[in-house]
Amino acid sequence: MDESILVVNCGSSSLKLALFDHDHQKIASALAERLNQPDAYAKISGDSVPVPLPANADHNQALASLVEAFRVRQWMTCDPIAIGHRVVHGGETFRQAVLIDPSTITAIDNCAALAPLHNPVNLAGIRAMQSLFPDIPHVAVFDTAFHQTLPARAYRYALPDHCYQDWGIRRYGFHGTSHQYMAQQAAQRLGKTPATTSIISAHLGNGCSITAIRDGLSVDTSMGLTPLEGLVMGTRSGDVDPGLFDYLAARGISSGDAHRMLNNDSGLLGLSGQTNDMRSLCELADHGHEPSQLAIDVFCFRLARYTGAMTASLSHLDALVFTGGIGENSPRIRQETVKHLGLLGIRLDPELNRSHGQVSNGRIDTPDSRYPVLVIPTNEELVIAREAARLAAAAGNTAI
Ligand code: ADP
Image (cartoon, rainbow, N blue to C red; front, side, top):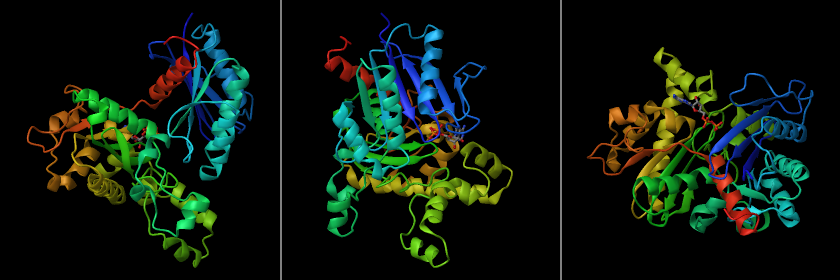
């Protein structure tokens, strides 16, 4: 019996599916994009031939086709033991991963107002997989859950109390699965336990967030009510003055237009006028494109500022950790950021930084740096697979 685990991550017009074996090694992964559009397509990693999808295929059809493709290739010869679903918003209801039952579905639906672009489509994926696999445990793993340990002083906005009491307006934080994984991985690499390890974790991908983790628990984070707050991102502005909205409204910009501007047209793309892709930006800057250099400067300075802010929540610091596509792959961004942190005594070794810490167990700092600096590849799918297996075992589905 091949005790496999499927991991499902549904976005608004795309989805990812990954298959893990009983040792939590990834066997296969697949991607579907442009869902609900005439040119919808699906592809298995490493295969050049796409998996056939009908025009305007939705999440249901894409998942069914990819599951079938995994079966045809004999990667999945029987039902998996569990399916883990990434769910973006768990509100204040979910502090950890849970087995999905009808009440879980209702609760996820109730959080949809907080993540209208994500929770409904996460639910669509859950329902599709439940109809394909009705007899096995399905587990929801929430982006927000890890941050439910934030103290009120970090999660409350200084708004009238009823905004929180009546409407749930507070900082929730996102990328929790990745930050939680950083806490575990950093502890392992430093020879400590997560419960005694305090780090600042910078997840820098298309979305970017930074989290203070004190003795294994999230105590402050840069994203807020939505994933727009905080750091500069690929197309998202991060922090702006809330007075901006009135100022824009007076110039005829509707709230919908302002939302689009801040979420889709800002960040690295907005500043550079060229691209949201950090690798391309670095190349443009090297060729003298000043707006691209400015985008990099604003990105790194904001990140350094937030790194400093995160120290307010810690009594000691075991490591500053970089992860995500940019954090894992860009020595330049790490160096430019740390350059602003001289007062904290953080220093990078140029050679170790260039090699992304691959020969030094992730370490890229100098011997005289006051704090260790680590580069750790994130693996959110693995965390979801582990959580799904753990809860399935607890539910008695297998003895993993
Ligand atoms: P997502 O948040 O969509 O999962 P990723 O974590 O894959 O995104 O990060 C994508 C970002 O990582 C892009 O801006 C990409 O340019 C950047 N990136 C990847 N490799 C490099 C590199 N070598 N140098 C600079 N940026 C890089």
